[in-house]
Image (cartoon, rainbow, N blue to C red; front, side, top):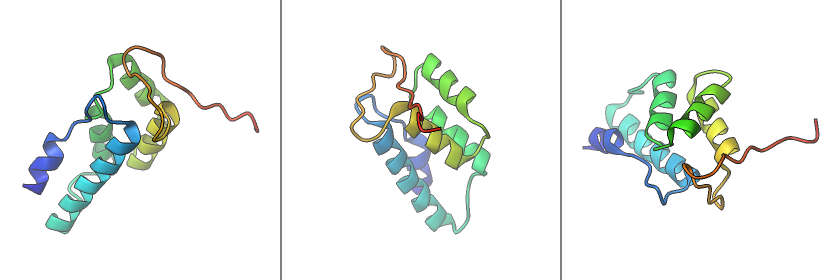
Length: 105
């Protein structure tokens, strides 16, 4: 049942990216605990996180092209950077993504 929950989990439209990532991580940790091993490679875990986030085509392409390498930590970092944190109310299909620019460099 825990594996099925992870397999079926998709981000709801009303759910922020931060809430989605936390729930994905919670479900994934349950699967790891149940199986006593990592069920997905780091690449596939990143792919699944992005694929199940219900991003529009444009936003999905932006996330994928923004990854410097395909791994889970990079996927999480990229999604947080593009879509903001908990208070972000980014409309995924109706407006361009909010990109954070580091002006201190």
